[in-house]
Image 1 (cartoon, rainbow, N blue to C red):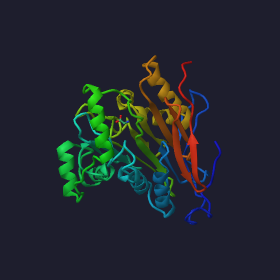
Image 2 (cartoon, protein in one colour):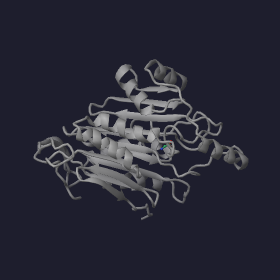
Image 3 (cartoon, rainbow, N blue to C red):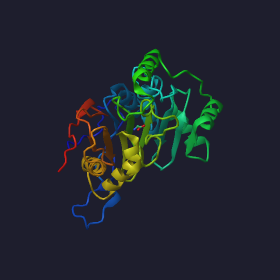
Image 4 (tube, rainbow, N blue to C red):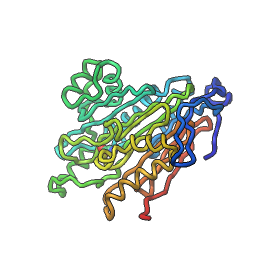
Length: 332
Ligand code: GLY
């Protein structure tokens, strides 16, 4: 992969070449991976997210290029999609469960392994920010349902209707023909997972979704589950997932990807291995999409998905780079 440096002519004009701790890949399986060793690799601030959410990566880059932290960048980046009512898979405007309730899941994780999460959260536009409050203001990691909503109000979040005219109409149509049956991936589900590296070389991640459309009430997917929808280890890298959450939870997907990178795999190799493990257990199934996005300490990225149109969006000092990863899973 082509490497870039975060040069003085970047958006902020403030960064310089700095020694960064990095993952040294092992060439042979028996070789021990060396993690956290100093190297002369330049730090490469970057924001990447699943799918083609260019406004989200642009926002994250704005934060990074103003010397903001990786954590602030992922939060503010994914908030763009949470607030965008035309995105019907995340935040306000997300599709409801089969009883007509919009319930949101999100999590966030920082460079020190701190994390926060909310599941089955109603009436709040920015679950990722509530997740951050859980991380920073409580001794807990996950808050659910009514308790999470109550906590959000205590933290100053406002109650808001999340169902829009568009999603209400679609739901009414679904009810006419669905027989109240939840069907996997009847929508094209585009969860946003984002990973960033800041000017200090630190990594953070966030993941947020309205979950599967017309899910059984109470269903929680992978997106708010640390290790499944998101995982960050600042010595190695980060990973996030999109697609059918049940399959990602079963394999502790994002943790798996980071551990594969720790063993020396590139982000791309790790994502491919993760998807293949899932597909090995699901031969013949055509009803779902599963994808992983990963970043390592050097700022290298990779993505792989059981969906021919999978794209991930990357923002570096040179601006948008829209990567379409059409490495659709094929049985070997
Ligand atoms: N990956 C999102 C979900 O399954 O809810």
